[in-house]
Length: 586
Image 1 (cartoon, rainbow, N blue to C red):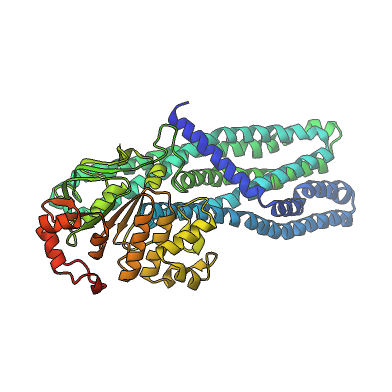
Image 2 (image 1 turned 30 degrees about the vertical axis):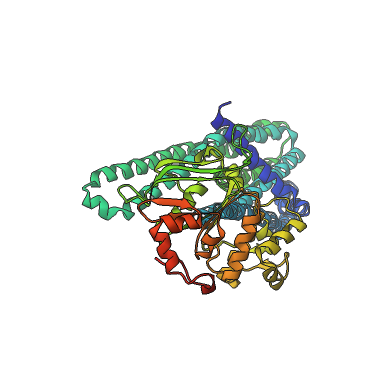
């Protein structure tokens, strides 16, 4: 089996597992659902019986009161069905809402994990799209449960009712039903595939249109209207073509309904003379037709419509959610698994933000040994954060190579890269959850002793106590920027990453707190790279990388004072550690 079919099969197993788990973990609600379904399905059994007996033993026999009594029985069955329907909806909601919550947790968990590991804010647009898929999956799951349950109970009631009336009629009802059902089920895989392709085509069309609108002025200025129109038209036509194919296949649903829901009526009517000769009465024939028309055909129609539309949407939505959310998967057998003794090497690295733009980083050569403490200084906008993003693998260099442990950054899988490095940006990210969840997010299996050690080392013991301990719920909006930085710093300290990148990650802390945090990371096993906010960071580092826009120089503090006019100028405009919050000038 090739890679794509293997992934599709694995995803299909995941979808089945998620759906089974959603049902299995609510046994009481499932029992409640089944119990009330008997009440809701009462007319399925009672309708034909009541009509047959009302005709044969009542109106046809000259006993109208008896006939009315049987119709009253049917009315009572419908009343019971109405009461059961309400309870059925409540039971379905009790199963579906936890299912929705599980999917939402998966989406948010994946977004938070990637944000915490990469140092970037979560992609809110992607999360919003996935949330829409979650709502779609929730609604579709509820609809599928409703129609499948209703179909099973209705068919059971009809078959038992027809069997009670006259066993010879059962094949006339069941055989066309089975044929129509088989026809519908055979069309489902193709329908799911086309529905999936239609969703992807809609996304491509939306992306093309958005790109065209955003760049409309440039398109007109460059005279590229026809070329861009061809690109958009190609996506629109692809979507329309997929939609037409899906519409053609949908016609199979109509055929299956005709075979399973209407053909039994024709077969019963055609067989009526033979049935009468075999002892059937007018009531039995009318009762059978009542079963088919009032119970069987509507139940089959609901099943075909519900599964054909909502079932396909459910599977497609779940596949999208499972494929694009959740934590990064474990590395494959050939991927980089462990990162031991990481050293960092940048070789002739260049990077520019867009074609034709002036390079922000040009020809940067840098070697950082395992366990080294490096500070990066330079004027604002010179490219310090860009270097951090290149090392973290968030940006890919236009020229040269970035190597971690002798391996190109882009060759790491996501899981191994998360273990190799952690980046804490200036605006630290904290999510809603307990304090312990925030602190240990990147450190699975962290013990309480390790957690205490990290909290004390980074200097957030007082904050942890003020928040109410590790089990306290954290509201990010109630934390100051400095408090959020302390949480993110402790999270990074606990992570298994061998390279820690602090991109002005202490800028909202006072100088004493900043020094304590940086010293904790310097004492921690691994490599520390600090994008300096205050020049005290340079004094604490073993070496300093000075970026001045023309060339980058690296060396000890004393070597840079002697070799770099920019560094001497920065130090000359700085009042020293006692200056507290002063930033590096320039």
